[in-house]
Length: 601
Ligand code: ADP
Ligand code: ZN
Image (cartoon, rainbow, N blue to C red):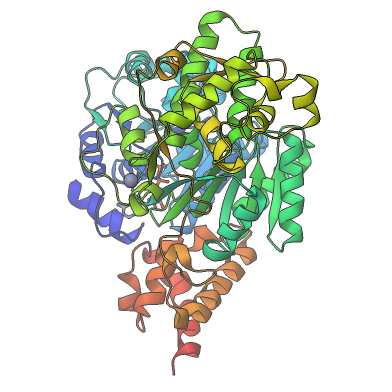
């Protein structure tokens, strides 16, 4: 049976090898075991149920909450020659009836179905008359009331183990924590089968967090030097900022679209559709954009505002590079972000326990932002997955952070907060430290306090950096009303000289790892190949448009890249490229080889 699985891997999906632990998962399902699979986004969960659906007799039933994406999944499978269909409330009853009949006749390999439809008595009766290969429960964390995507329809999926005890069940998720995992296993009755948990690292994502000075310009710079023409997501905190940023980027020649919950549903849908179906769209969005964005070739995720937790940051950045190709997670952050978020939390009306948890989560995120060591090591550690060595693929590994002894400066800053009665924001505090006689200084007679002018030797920007780090590290608290700073329990140790403090030196611009040519950076395409690369992309785009599907369903970037570098001139050579199965070979090889021909001189 495993031989059959390898055959399907090669001829249908066009891949040479399984990625661990795909082979073990598939072997278990083929044996009829129930399995639980926890793999990071982009790890390759789909093949774990798609291949057994093709190898085992009968049809594989895939339960997924993401109705909007079902048709895309079906289209992608159809491209590979798999007989797939989907059933959900957005389809006509005529369509759904046809699917039922086809399945009864044994004419389908896989059916994607929404949970609320699966649990109808009518569906159960129909399924009882079909030959079933397996049940795959995708996004299985939706069964957990502890997690954040709980769906009551998922609870009823426990009927599967009672009604269809002989059909293997495979539950899959990318959601990490142990409590959710246990809940899935219990509710879906998976306790007798094997559990597969892969590491959480996403080595192809480069993590970078830089200090804000002119964020929009910094972002544009990133696009121009590394991600021109690439698909990406830019996250902002507010709807207003989403719209302003999208408009500004468009003026700068970027193909940018806005997405937030306040937009008309039709517009939202249209923009999401464009993002999925067209090449190189930059989606500027609030966190409302994301759940189930199943686009493999997102080359960068940029944050113009600080996420509220490491979980959020990891989930959002995780939408980059699902295809395993190099991708960038970039964030610009500054003093205002820290103040704003701390202020928001201080003013929250939630109960004390909830507030405390939120505060802790934000502190974790700030710790990541101010970190001087390897970002990936901290991220992995946060999720309980130790990374022995620094990663070599984050900003701090690529350009080690310099530090300076900020003890004295911190003491001056804290004592200035104290001397001015803990009633002022950063701007005024810096004026006092630097001895500036502003109107406000005169109004409060602050030229008389003992800290007036004691920090003249440090320029404004550096003071802001000191204050940012003091707030981020918890040595200063932020008042809800006007963002006034006040001392915390931990500030005393510094004031009394019992504790010293190393601060990071802010670099204006985090250097790029290498200066590559515009457009191609994430893929490391040689300059002389750029034109051919564009021609191959244009061909892919044309084939996709003709069929009304996204370009990545023709070939993923990784496949296109291999075509570019190996330049196959025979069907045989073409078929050995990753991601080229028999169906796609028949359908597209000639067309792409013709493009290669025109560049051959
Ligand atoms: P997940 O659902 O876990 O996020 P997917 O199933 O969408 O991940 O797979 C992520 C990417 O990896 C896809 O582009 C897929 O084609 C590719 N992939 C999966 N398995 C393999 C494999 N064995 N060899 C090469 N590429 C693979
Ligand atoms: Zn690192």
